[in-house]
Length: 271
Image (cartoon, rainbow, N blue to C red; front, top):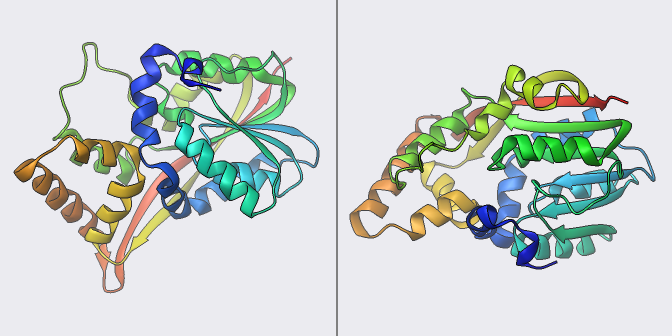
């Protein structure tokens, strides 16, 4: 698929998330426990058709495929998808990875037995459109499993650090991705189509120090990498200083251990 697959208003987000490229795999590694939590609750079965939305470098897709499901992974970023294909090949897993838009999925109605998205669809720029697509492509009786950071998670603090250095948002401001971590909001988005249940979890970011966290994010996490690329001189140094200081606030004798709370949403598609 080509860039034409991505809607015009999502071209910029695609470039942002794609900028991490193959290095995003290191980000996924730090949330591997939360991804596994979501996979366990989804409970994919052999030969089921499962879609991983906003797959990144394919960590969740690989975990689902390892259970014998027929997996498709889709993401805005072409470089992310190339990295996902390479990783799957290395692990000898057959996964269909495609470039695509979560708000306009290139699949027929009622195609998938199950759908998963781990800290992915929460960043869709038009949540209602993404939610409608998740509902549309899931078979009646099928399952959905999502993870999203809670609205008061430490990850919100990471974005607050970066927000200080970002350009002013458009008016009206876009919806917060952290809304997907609130049960009431998820009910609004998906409750008409799915019977929903929820469970919270905590994923701990462990790095030697704040500088290691900065190096991890500025190389592999699209929003941080893109922001850093727009800053010069003192502003870049100040962002780095503040980012390091924030993470060092979670430092123990052994290094940074930052707990990040998330919500797992499990849904059964209504008939």
